[in-house]
Amino acid sequence: MAKLTWIGHSAFMLEGKNRILFDPFISGNPVAKIKASEVKTDMICVSHGHGDHVGDCVDIAKRNKAPVASIFELASRFDSSGAKVEQMNIGGSVRILDTDITMVNALHSSDVFEGETMQTGGSPAGFVVDSGVTVYHAGDTGYFGDMKWIGEFYRPKVAMLPIGDRFTMGIREAAYAASVIQPEVVIPMHYSTFPAIEQNPELFEEQVRKAGSGKIRVKIMKVGETIDI
Ligand code: NI
Ligand code: MN
Image (tube, rainbow, N blue to C red):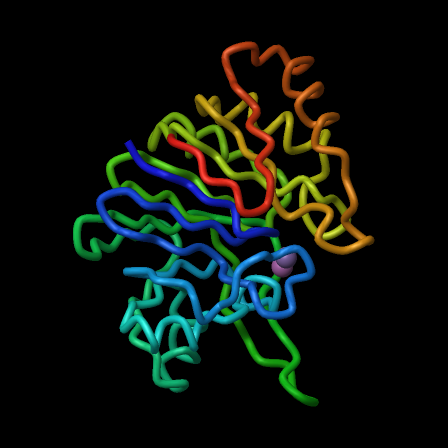
């Protein structure tokens, strides 16, 4: 058993054997209901270098003395900001405390402007995290064929998939992705934070049903809600 809380956008807190914070975009997140300074965590997973995913990562990492798991290039930047890091790359796993973190592919971009200069964020990534329950956080991504492999090989019980469209999969693609990954529960994320990614998650639920994935439960979380998984 574990608990999962949606902080908003792609930010989640997973409380299993340890506390794992994903993509902690909290300050400046128009939907988040908590303050970054309140967050307590044992580790942080950051999927890629965009501001709506890195968010308050360095501050939270330093205050909690929590390592940040992210791809080599991005981790090196967090490291130079004084955060403790676990450098990783696609396909690799690390164990932090009692939690196994595997970095998987994502189809997106990860470079960011800092002032006038473009900084590399390495490749974008997703995470499969086992902290008692196995969870797949897809990060920002388009659909890619290896989602089938991620589903078959890691057998995540819960998948968090972006449905916001424009920058990531939209509802059609995410519903197809769910049918391919076959988690027990799929949770939509990365939507309705900003007008550009406004979506009705109930349409996602309908599409997952239509994709013939009757066994998959769609859980539409409310921001701030905690569920047992
Ligand atoms: Ni992004
Ligand atoms: Mn994003």
